[in-house]
Image (cartoon, helix red, strand yellow):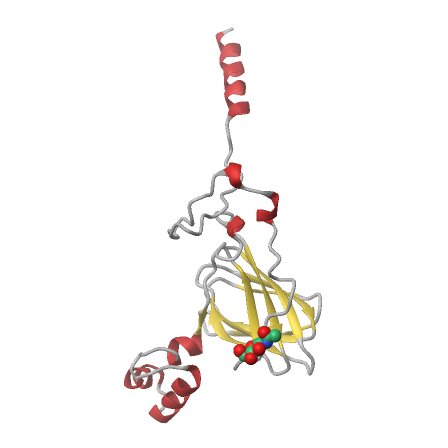
Amino acid sequence: MLRIIFLLSLLFALSNASVQDFCVANLKRGETPAGYQCIRPIHVKSKDFVFSGLGTAGNTTNIINAAVTPGFVGQYPALNGLGISTARLDLAPKGVIPMHTHPGASEVLFVLTGSITAGFISSANAVYVETLKPGQVMIFPQGLLHFQINAGKSSSSAFVSFNSANPGLQILDFALFANNLPTELVVGTTFLDAATVKKLKGVLGGTG
Ligand SMILES: *[C@@H]1O[C@H](CO)[C@@H](O)[C@H](O)[C@H]1NC(C)=O
């Protein structure tokens, strides 16, 4: 009898347990390693779960002839705490997403239009490169350097997803040549010559 009462009370307790289904980010509060604070569920509307930012091509009039349109937690607050995010790539002819890493996530890339040569370099410095056509998918394991480059004569585009709400993005050329790391240290750590480093700093906006 006691056991039945215990089971019934357990059942009752479980049926009333409130599960936190989502935590739409309050972007006005700072981000912590655990994500953002939630806005109160009473203020969450169905449209908060919809992101319209990937519907149009990004502006590819720039040095890389390409655009990354992120749907990370900063743009799409409903992703907060769910460990997923999305992005769109647009590559004009000759467009390239330069060598980069996402420190916080693995990536799945789905080619929508055109043709894209994509690849990554493993920790063992093995190279994995493929040319993809529409409908093909390639993965880029977490933290590894990788790139995408338009392989055709027309524009190409891709839909991307990540297993983090905030995958991060670090572009290798920008890390080396778009900041004030002194030229002599860039030369010393890359074995490039100073003239090349100065030239790339000039192109990418670096100083020093
Ligand atoms: C795209 O970016 C370029 C360079 O910043 C700018 O001149 C141009 O107006 C932009 N095009 C559109 C449609 O926003």
